[in-house]
Amino acid sequence: MIDYKSFDDASAYTLNNETILQTVDFFTPIVDDPYDFGRIAAANSLSDIYAMGGTPLFALNIVAFPSDELSLDVLTDILRGGADIAEKAGIPILGGHSIKDKEPKYGLVVTGTPFKNPIQNSTAKEGDILILTKPLGLGVISTAIKKNIATEAMINDATDVMTYLNKDASEAMRSININACTDITGYGLLGHLLEMTKGSKLTASIYFDKINFIDGSKNLASDGIVPGGTKRNYDFIKDKIKFLNNLEKYKRYLLADAQTSGGLLMSVPKESLNELKSNLSSSKYEIKEIGELKALKSMSDILINSKNCALTLAGWYVAENGQKICDIVRAPLVDMGFDVLIGNLGRVLAIKK
Image 1 (cartoon, rainbow, N blue to C red):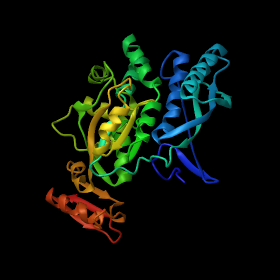
Image 2 (cartoon, one colour):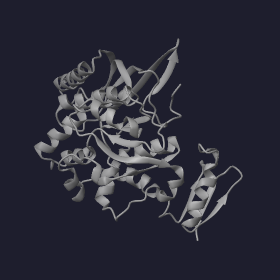
Image 3 (cartoon, rainbow, N blue to C red):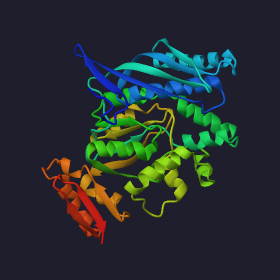
Image 4 (cartoon, rainbow, N blue to C red):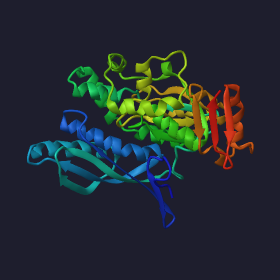
């Protein structure tokens, strides 16, 4: 069983020797067009099933709608958008539930099945290459839309990204030896990568210049058009990351930018990389190698700017070579000028000298 105790994208439950996947997602409009909103929300809901290498079977609508303030024609367009995406995914929408609310909300409950075993986001391996299947920048452009400063090209490009299903990418990774996968949504690239590295007991290096961004999103971020959710993501993650070469603040925000229906982040063994690229050769978006996974002993890289830190889980884990994690991280922390104390349960406290 895979449930809320892990960071995985969907739940998994085995019933009568058959595993089912289930997920739910819904939100308020991020574009003005109700049909596009329906498409985006449905694609986003399906993404969690695709991230686990699953095949969706059917869905249920979740609707909140201010029927006293908006025409039911708006709701019809939202539902039509969701139905069209479900048709592209090859699944029926069997029903759902609606309530009256002050603002529109829409999404899907999606039920699916895994291909063999579910692909989790906590099973990456040292030496894996990180692959990203869609460009970033959706949160920034969504904020520009709300401020009425997004160009028509930006809106169209962002809508195309958000309504492009992760179906083909999911199917492409099933036939190879992929180790882990997650989809990039509300926590941004760095937040979801943190979940992957934490669950896999690894660390990672990524390269800004290797990442694709939607046209115009860099300029918007540079001009200060950054959503509040992205800033909160960055504030949460910043002390866990070492940014090299004085990376500008707006670029750091872009790496933490909250996405909607973003791409898949795959952890791929080097020997499987060419086959994956071949499988994804017809993808609408360029498949990018953005970084790699490294052993946890490199964890010193993400602590170098901290005056003090406490790794509360360190002592519970054992690396593949049998060493305790608390012992692995001690040496590089000492080299960096920390006084390191290890408690009875292996809790590491590092204080700058």
